[in-house]
Length: 259
Image 1 (spheres, rainbow, N blue to C red):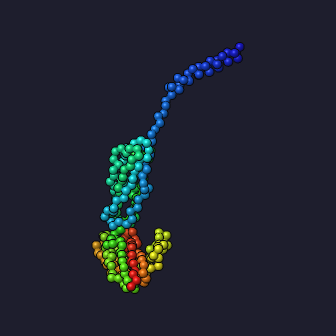
Image 2: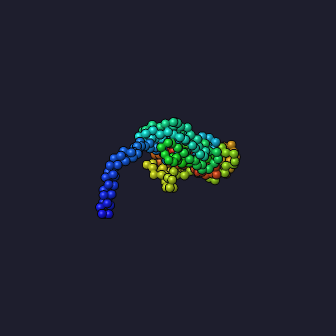
Image 3: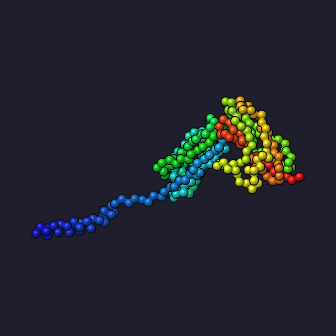
């Protein structure tokens, strides 16, 4: 008798569950499908190279792209270090649209300078970060390239001038000024169709800089080109010093002509 009562109770529970299931399914909350915004910043890092202390670099751009299917709101753009920005990213950024952040480097002291660009927007749980790198220097060069075009073979050219200026407020100590073949970042000679790495000795330099240059002072470096054969040659004028960003270099180009 007890077994019969238990079985009736089980069947009643099962029937009740089947009757209530449609109501529970209707009442259950339905999570809406979110149309995500996907943000991307390019490039991932910015390098500005050497910049004279107290002067502003040419700006470099970071592009902010929304590759998603919904709009996002730019909440905050912040900078750190010796870097500043202007941008076109205020307000809402629609889907499949982009905006630009232009960044400028203005070093306050010599040596390596680092900063961070931080972008906070409504679609992300954490900010996006771009790392920034530049080098402050007190060394100012009048040119970054010297060209000697159409010089007759075995005839020395007229000297061309590079002016070195100490733009800092402390004396600049100069270790060496020399001509060297171009090298890659790993120290190997640059592979060139004109075999330029074997022809740096066609350039010569003379200078009046000594081993120290006072703040605000300048000195001349004269470079000549004497081709030994027809064709192109290239080299670097290298200045090693304690002014930040050392060694500085000037690219030298020359073309020898047969007589």
